[in-house]
Image (cartoon, rainbow, N blue to C red; front, side, top):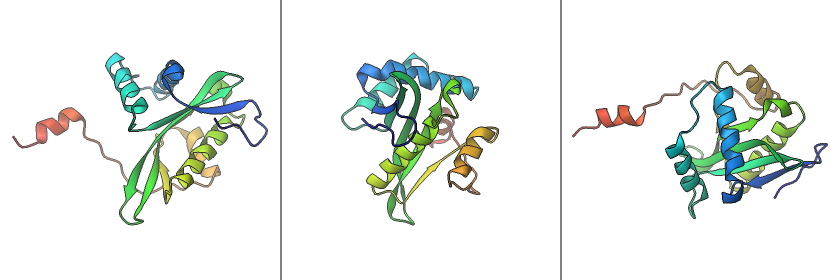
Length: 166
């Protein structure tokens, strides 16, 4: 368990495990609401538990707790850079409840992720931000991140299945 190094003395960061998984799901649903997206359905929640808590997890998730209350979370996994020939920590989610923003919790969790990236030997850390999420954009740029000129593309499973030659 990680505890803070600056003014936010009551924040702890703990790995998501079975006993705190419901707190994690509640925050995932809060992020979906904030981003105006559909939250995971019951089947997706089961996959989250399986994929995050297995002996070979596909992602790592951590809760940020303030005085025992889950107020934020992060999810990351590693990808690989063929140019750097090093892993990259891909930050899938970094979220703090709106009622607990601007108190250093997001920064603490962001620094926690950077520390994990360094510990894992990553050459970089990357993530995406919705183009309308100005508070997140300002936060990341204020903390040294730079916007890339990449365009993201996506194919859904249904689209891939339609396009795979039979």
